[in-house]
Length: 302
Ligand SMILES: [Zn+2]
View (cartoon, protein in one colour):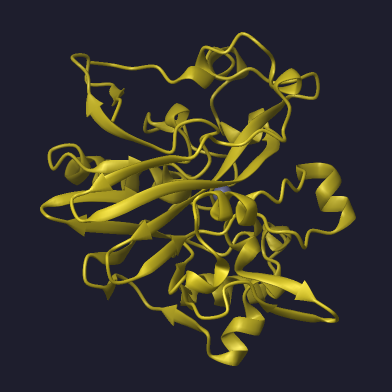
C-alpha cells in the first residue's frame, strides 16, 4: 500500500521544527544482520538545488521550505552488525567545517552521541564505508586532536572509491567546495583508507556497486543476508521525495546518467524486494519501493 512519510505531511515550516532535531534511532534485522540508523543531525540546503529541474510549485507540495527557501536535510549513517564485524556506512558532516560553511549549511555534530546512544563506541567500529567523498558523507572520518587530524574510528579500515579521491584532488571549479581533503587524505597517507576501483565485495554479505550520475564513481553499499538485500543508495535517491526518475538534485554532475542509474537500480531492487536506505531523508532511513498501478514509484513502509 502506498505510504506517505511524516515529513511530507508536516504542516510546520522546517524553521520552526529546528535543525537540531535528530532522526529517531531505528533498528531492524536483515536476516542475520542488525541494522541501526544513526544520524549526524539535520542540515539545510536550498530547496531549488535539492530538487534540480523540478519547479517549486511541485516540490513544495512534498517538503516545505523556510523563509530563505532552505529545506531540512538528514545525514543518515547505517550501523551494520554482521555478527562478525561492526560496520559504519557514511559519516555525516563531522565537526571540521569552516565558519563560513557552518553559516551556510549548519554543523549539527550528532553522530558520535547517537552512536553512543546505540551502544557503540568509536573503537568498536571495524569498517567504515563512504559512498563518495563529499563533505556531508565523510565528515566524521577524522577529527582534530591537538594540532593533528586523526581517525575518529581508530581500529577501522576505511573504504572509498578511488575515482572520488582523484576527482576531489582536481579541485574543479564546479564542485571544489564539496571536497575537504582532511576528511580522507590523512587516512590514505597512513594506509587506513583503501581506495576501491569499481564493484567489489568488502566482507561476505557486504559489497559496493557503482551508480554514476551524482558523481562518476559514487558507490551504493549492498547488504545481503539470508536471502534478503538492503541497499544504501546514497545520493542517487537521496530522500523519499526523490523517487521519481527526473527528481534529481542540481548537484548531480551527470543528471542524464542519474536517470539511467535509477532505472537500473529499480529494475533490480523492485522485483527482488530490496530495502532502500536513504542518506538525506530527515525522517525515513529506509523503506521498500514499489511501482504503483500508474507505473509511478511508491513507498511501502517496513
Ligand atoms: Zn549528499
